[in-house]
Length: 68
Image 1 (tube, rainbow, N blue to C red):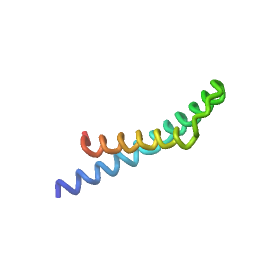
Image 2 (image 1 turned 180 degrees about the vertical axis):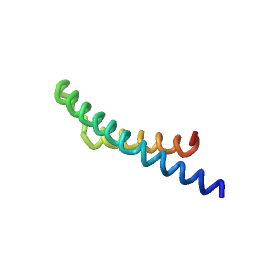
Image 3 (image 1 turned 90 degrees about the horizontal axis):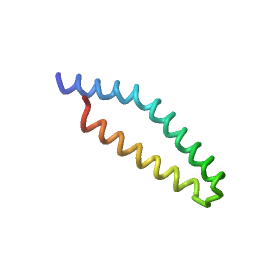
Image 4 (image 1 turned 30 degrees about the vertical axis):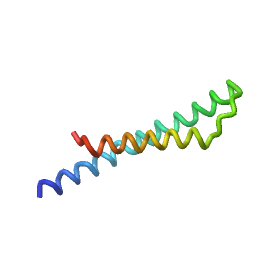
């Protein structure tokens, strides 16, 4: 029963953290687009999004390994 409670707690934590992380990542993507325009660089938007998504997976992995 304790393992189920721990899994439920992790689900609750992810439910609380996910919207904040998603909003932060959206901000990072938006800022990268602005900086790209300002610097007149030709960094593909898909490359920026890919880097941010990989970062999100890293954060999720760290949260699932260290729940508290």
